[in-house]
Amino acid sequence: MAIKFLLILTSLLSWLSKQPTQSTHPGPPIAVILDTDMDSDVDDVGALAMLHAFERAGQARILGVIVTSDDRYSAACTDAINTYFGRKDIPIGVSQRDSLKSFSRYTQKIAQAFPHRLASNAIAETSTSVYRRLLASQPDRSVVIITIGHLTSLSRLLHSSPDSISPLSGQELIARKVKAWSCMGGQFPSGKEANFYRPDPASTVDCLANWQLPVTFAGWEVGQQIVTGGEAFKANCKPNSPVYKAYEYYNNFKGRASWDQIAVLQAVEGNTPYFSVETDGYCQVAPDGSNEWRAGSRSPTQGYVKLASSIDVIQKRIETLMNL
Ligand SMILES: [Ca+2]
Image 1 (cartoon, rainbow, N blue to C red):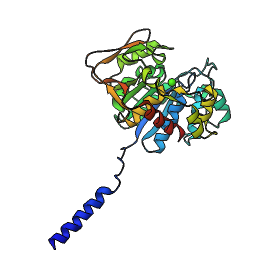
Image 2 (image 1 turned 180 degrees about the vertical axis):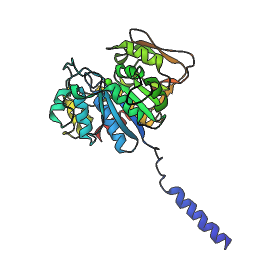
Image 3 (image 1 turned 60 degrees about the vertical axis):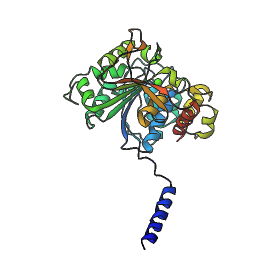
Image 4 (image 1 turned 90 degrees about the horizontal axis):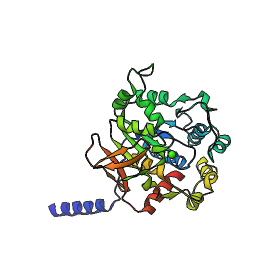
């Protein structure tokens, strides 16, 4: 009888070992505020599309989008993309309400072709107000801020004063509500990258000097190697999508580096299997916005992203998310 029981048990264990393993549960969705300069380059569109894909997969929750841009149609284009993905309710804060220009290859066309709520920046909330309202409404140490543009709005948040939204200063709100900052910016181990030096290098110096929480930089040298939005993307993306149209208007699917998408991918999915993060040292920024990685420990931790998978694997993962 005992032998028969053992045989049954052995068979059962053998059968169980052959069953497909359950995928690892990603855990609760990461609450994200995305701060974008959706204007002169198109990788911001890919990054926002990825964030929406992560949200639908239960991996992220988009609390709001900060538009740090002087392009007249940047905020409306952002709103149109959110609306296309079924999230027209996403709050949008703008760094600039007037003295706007029109220089993007795609924002005006997207804003005119796709439905959205935001008629103009003049009626939009300010970036500081939206940042403060969103942070005040969230549980402590729960929010990840992903910046994929220059740091004017983040710097203003840092220096914001108590108001009707919250009795806390910007510094205090960040310390209480934010978990981490993921920043597309800089070049590592040293260099000069646009988000850090153009048009507001003082905001970069300020943010790095006053940020008191962990920060991970996705430097120029990483996204530069990962080209997305080319012919393969065109073949797989829905032609009626604003993401498709943005890449078409930008350079007719010649492909573009994925600087901003790297920051989103690393912030939401973490390091494995695509990245490693160098944390031995810290980022020093000069007044002109150039930066270098210096030896020495820094608390809280700073780090910069390095590739740990093949370019092809990361490129495919990003485009899969951009196409969803
Ligand atoms: Ca950008």
